[in-house]
Length: 64
Length: 403
Image 1 (spheres, each protein chain N blue to C red):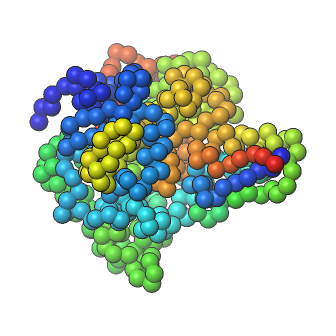
Image 2 (cartoon, one colour):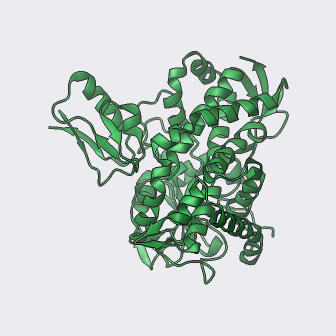
């Protein structure tokens, strides 16, 4: 499973990089930046799901 | 002016009616079942959607709805206001494409890193306020605490004297609360706000500093300095939008804890719960409802909307919609999945959301360290603000234990 971040949808609510700083950071405007590329391990997957489930803009998807 | 009480919110909606001000949540639930978009002839025509789905659709539809003015009142933006796409207080009042230009100017100052750098300042401010409450057993957590925190931060960021905080709160009263005054009276009441900002701009042009106002005066769009109207509007936004909003969020959180001793005891015993509790308080007690104006006559979800009709964009109602949130009417301080809309949705996501979250978190942490046990003092009235920002304005508490 991988993380798909739609930066076009991201409005900088900042939930993902607060909840999963090992997976997401932000740029100078507060827009999310994805830190990992590729398959997620189990811990990462749990954190990624938490980040996705708290994104008000539905900008994060977990999939293949 | 005495306004008639609302008989039925479905057809005569008014967010300044005392029933709504006292407790809007049962009304939201009832309207969501029955309408779900309420209407009113008040304010020259108004629609109030109560579902998450409709609120999200409108927040994301900048083609059919303009943000040209975001405070519902008896007038319409007229000759005295800047037209779209800039509006009176850019970027909150701006539409695309200008919106993004105005917003990008301000976003860096409100990004996580610069805001986190203000945490120590915030903690000291909170502790000074708590010291001032002294040993009293009966305190007012709004008048004695919450209302002073946001003005302290905004004054700091704008390089303005902290003692101007009282003035900022009076501006909020004029702009956000006194919305049911006749339009002419609102224009008169706005004069002191105008005078203050014009004087500050003049002073800062002569003595620039390391603050947001100096930054705006020095900023450029496509090689040109911002117009005075743009700088004026953005200062207006900064000194109004970040005040009663966060004040309300801090107050509403403390009010919840004063009435829910189990939640209070859990957070005091497990401070690691505070981040999810803050998000849940933001969901359940979201202070801010926005507004839009309908751009042209069109039909939205079966409602015949007319040009210049108001939309009361209730993020609090969206946050209580059971279609969007499990156990929507319960406050669960460890809620894991929480896509709440307290800071709005789409391109107008609250510019100050990082600042607001930091202030809320620090304010609650310091409060709970000092007062790990307290309850609502029901011998005195708890009162709420009227208008599009809702939160406690008098919050009488009895302190039961000190940290």
